[in-house]
Image (cartoon, rainbow, N blue to C red):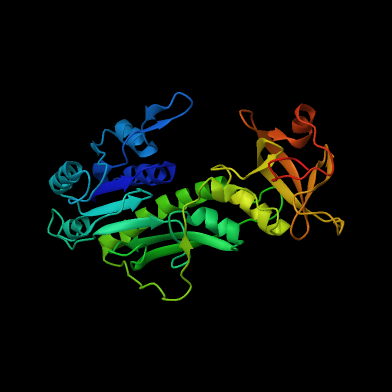
Length: 337
């Protein structure tokens, strides 16, 4: 098929490469404008733009798609480029811009070969209606969901409310050395999303693709993760905090304070031992090469991989050699004890 592809991060780039490998003609790529990144804050192309350049696909980077918004010229240029592409469908994956009604209307027109319009198909990393919104991978881990997956959705004017065309579930690993982080789950879901969109387009071509309306119950909103939300709340239970640490790995990284210093926590596990009844949440109970044991609102957590500001991830033994931690100190107090 002849496609327009809209996406920005690596999750979307995986799907774009998979579509190319499956033999689909990518007529146009929409991706977000280059952003400053890294210590030098130099403009950096998105993963999708970089791949589009490798594949020789034209790229359009509007700052907005709203014809009545702040950048109407950008939106008008994008509309012309999309019309000129004469695509059979538009595939969207983690694009980062809201698609206004004119995009849905344009893609609802019959394709260049006179076939039925496929419209805009979205690759969404949750089992809809669970976790609509911007951060479904993070929120699924944080909530302790037993499974997640990918849905191929027919986009409409709502936020992830369209009919589901294909879906496939995978288990989330919550225990042991292979416990999922947002990073590991992202990679598995990205690969699944690439495979699923290829299957969906094949079924569409064969006339066997079936749309199923989403249930009205079980809807959750996956709010975008902020740095402030990644601050560890030691008043929460140990299990909840451990899930949050994995949910915010690699970005933005769960963090706390040790005196005036910001410390990121990358790996932890619930500590099975008893917690002294007088220990306030955030109090360090033990600090040795096996881990820093911290009292929580319920239970305790053993921290085993940490990072000080400007440093790198370290196993706890290496971290303690550079920054000793004494039992009795309270984390998250911005003042030590």
